Every structure is written in structure tokens, then in C-alpha cells.
Figure 1 (tube, rainbow, N blue to C red):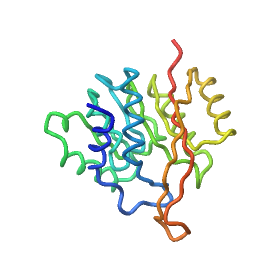
Figure 2: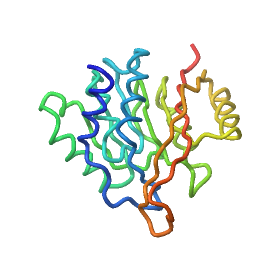
Figure 3: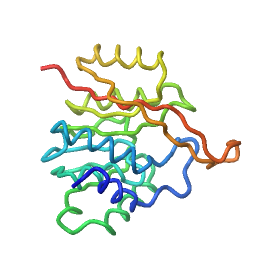
Length: 208
């Protein structure tokens, strides 16, 4: 499969139609999902791996991971509505063998009790309403996985802080690339039809 083919498959996943502002629910664009998961795949972090998507939303990252050979995927989100959406999306698009490789869990990502996995891939809340929400997701990922791919709002202060947290938790880190992430006009407080924020893709690996 080519990366462009993966992107076209991901586009078939229905987005969140009624996002909740307080949860900062923004559907990750198909091109970013495909690129992110492809980067992980090319580094040997997807095929035959157990993957968790923390804050899974409509299930795009989980779906892309399965398409590239993940052995098992956990879709975890605090919102029952979006977990149900992810379940319906996957049931519509996946064959029975692949569909059997996903579990859906309605749970606060910050809770204890999430099983250990090989890899976390996540697009956490960017901290627009809460300046530490994405770092809380990242800290949880450090607890349950040895390899993490995570999107975070791009600025110099954030980069310094994320690098420090990773070192303190015993992880090596690499800033892979930066995307222009579109935020559509979803709420009354938004004044533009669409605007873009810079978002960094990081890879973290537990030190041996």
C-alpha cells in the first residue's frame, strides 16, 4: 500500500459531526493521519504491534494502523458518542477478521487501568482551553507504551517543555515534522470559516 492510498482509505472514516468544545474535539485530517501512521510504519512501529489510540475520536488513527498491519488496537475515549462513532465507522469499513482486532473503551484517558501496549499513536487536545491537557495525555502514554507518536501544538516553549518531560520520564525523543492543522468553524466563538495552527509530530522511545 502507498501512503496516498492509505489517505484515501482514511477519508472514508466519518468525522465527528457534533464536536464538544470542552473536549476540544477536532477531527484529524486524513492526510495528517496517513502521514503520521505511515511514519510509524516505516520505522517498524506498526506491523504486528499492539497499538493504542488515546482520545480516539472517530477512529481514524486506529483504522490506519490496522490497514498497515497492527495486530491489535485499543480505541479509548472519554466520550461515549465518539467511541460509538468509531465503532460504527470500523464496522462499516472493515472485514470481520480486522474488526475483531479492535476493542473500544469508554474511559478517561488519564485514569489508571489502561493495559500496556507496544505503541501509542495520539492526537491529544492541543491545550487551547487547558494549557496542560496534551501533556497529561503524553504523560499517560509514557506509562503504558515504550514507543509513542504524538501531535502537539508547535511553539518554542512547548518544544522545550516536551523535551524535558521526555528526558525526565526516561525517553529519547525526535521532532519528526510540523503540520498545518486546519481548525474549522465549528462553534459560535469561531470568527473564521477555517484557520490553521502549527502542530508538531513527535516520536518518543523508552531508553534501553
